Amino acid sequence: MSNNRNGHRQRLRERFLKTGLRGFAEHEVLELILTLCIPRRDVKELAKALLKKFGSIRNVLDADPAQLKAFGGLGEASIVCFLLIKAFSEYYLQQKTVELPIFTDNASLVQFWQSRLGALNYEVFEIAYLDAACRLMKDGIERLEEGAGARTKVCSEKILRSALMRGAVNFVLAHNHPSGNAQPSQTDLQITQNLHYACTLINIRLLDHIIIAKDDVYSFRQSGLLA
Image (cartoon, rainbow, N blue to C red):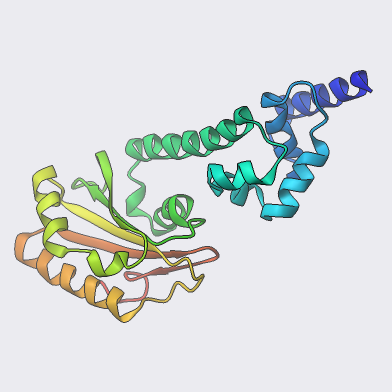
């Protein structure tokens, strides 16, 4: 049994080294991760059980430590591994974004915010400060507010003051709708209108306001509400 288990682990790793994750079933991807932190145990059934409980790898990585611990079958090393993979991915994406002027392209812009906010189960407002070439500035992502009532706390004056202090020429506002409906609320419309007007007074440009839901997105610019 031990030889079969070890052989299976080795085959998973060899497949990954040859082709990446192409052709892997979702439970095999999770199984491969688990082999890194659970060395002496068959983890195939554990991987399947995690997917049955949480629904997807993305949901597993978005679960908080208490949820993972309550699931059972996961030690501290496994929980830290999941948290580290998610944090590492976000860190990598942010560093990569600094190197590329992706904010000139709406599709890339949406992809960036979906990866940051799409799976969150609580509301978050973030802002990206950009230079004249629409490149993300160093440490250019700022979280404005999060949690219940976040949108009512967003302050145009605070955003513009921060943009001026950083020397930003452009910026993008983004937030998520955990409800799954990306359509803007009246408050979202008001925030965007206020910011857009204030920007015209100080020569800073609001490029877009992106609303992210789990499987949906809304762009104020694409919808014609920002010129």
